[in-house]
Image (tube, rainbow, N blue to C red; front, top):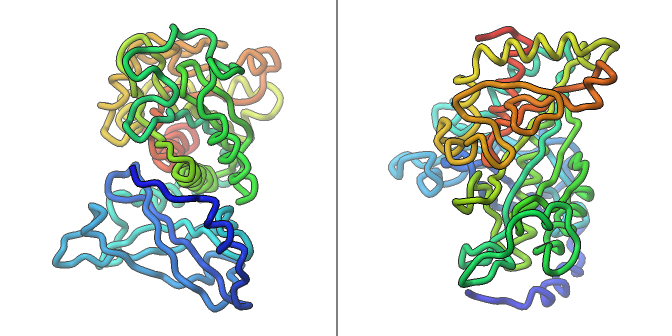
Length: 360
């Protein structure tokens, strides 16, 4: 492993840069549909919105998004965030990717998601996504685990405290602050059931901002972990056996669900979802359900991938109605099926199509 003195960088980050100069880091989803890439350019102005930023391009043959003989792929800025690493007026720029013929790349799932959100805007769909992930050493071994064995059984690690129960809290705290600085609507974090596994929550977000904020929060997580010499995996079942997997539980509501006696609308939504379970499963991980097959076994707080179920406060159901929602008869539902590596644009689009637009 190549090590550098991270503290030396601070000396250079404190250097002033000329007025009206800005470093803009363009960030996009690559051809895997899971990984993120980025590169930086200098701007001679301080952008206030993504529409002010120039369209750029990159070598798509190196990211699985184009052939070498026709490799230019275009970056269209769509969301702008303050940069928590370079500070000052510098920006992070979330981008959509477009091919040479101006059509979206296969992994540009934002474009259709935005179109669907516009169709349903009068229903004001709100989302909250719970992103679970696992921290690894650079040798891909779970952070803090014995190198030649396993830690004690699950039980003391969830929301735990103490060096024998929690691994990597410094990464988690740094990521939390970076998200807040950047304006991401992060709402919390906690240690999860498997040691070295964590979760952060983003939301409530309306419409397309859910996918934008979650993708940028993922980028920040990988980038923060890089500074600590730690690897992040979104694998939904990183360790086989009697260990919890990782999901991206998705909370959803519309205006009607949030109003008095909204439980009726929640129940209608669940009925709609029950009719398209297989379609949702195919959409809920980047590999058409194959990743979730390892996770959704009916064990370790999951439902079976083959069966649709719903219940109040039931973490073993496909759809959970929180206890408070059932008692107050208003609120939201939780879809527990999306995998940790699911595309938030795909998940949010699929929910809106089914629940708001009545598409089968």
